[in-house]
Length: 303
Ligand code: ZN
Figure 1 (cartoon, rainbow, N blue to C red):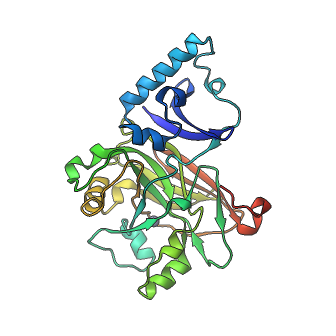
Figure 2 (cartoon, rainbow, N blue to C red):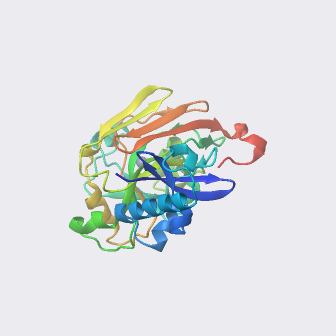
Figure 3 (cartoon, rainbow, N blue to C red):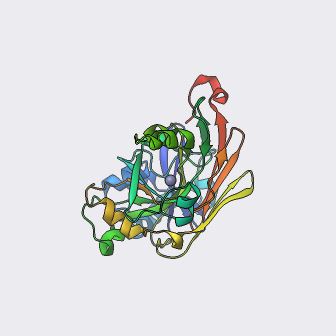
């Protein structure tokens, strides 16, 4: 059972491991302040993480610090960070659930369709989704996201899961009118997908010892407590191994890359003041407040 959390306190990033006794900070032990760094140093695996947790506990014991007291192992008020902050790329599968393709009036594709979001879109659990003026209707899309752990190209579906570091939730927030307007003219829809803060991600990176992407997981999204999206991961047209094999045919995957696997039916509008909670069974709940750009404190963009 391994789930990791990226947080920041006093301006420094830390990596925490959730354990039955509370979170354990492994930053000093593994010499990697963020999960991004951890992934670049070497292969992130449940075994390696268990080793670092044991070493962190041993170090605390030597220093006479309280052991396994949960929050006492943490300074006060850590701020969440996305599980991965600087992926080389975020790729998103479109129309991977039949009902969702139909609700937007699209044909169900036989070939895998995917597009890119950019790292400026990432915000953590509890971070704000900031809607700029003039972008029209904005919609939520809850998605199972895969984080890559190992450089890889031309994967077969059979070997694809061996390069996965873990799983998390991504809300593929979309300026739908911009997307449809551009798409309708045959133009790229980047402007509708890559807006700052339009990819909340988290709260955890859950490693493959705890999450099987081929098992059936409930996927839900709530706005202000009301159920909007409901689906199951088993309804995906293209499975996680098929997606990784198809993308890696022409694109080399790098540690930290995020692949979002498409959204089930029920997408709908978000407006300032909304609280949106994206849930996937086994991955937790990703909560974000929607605000208008005029609500960003001091005129600076929230992060
Ligand atoms: Zn999407």
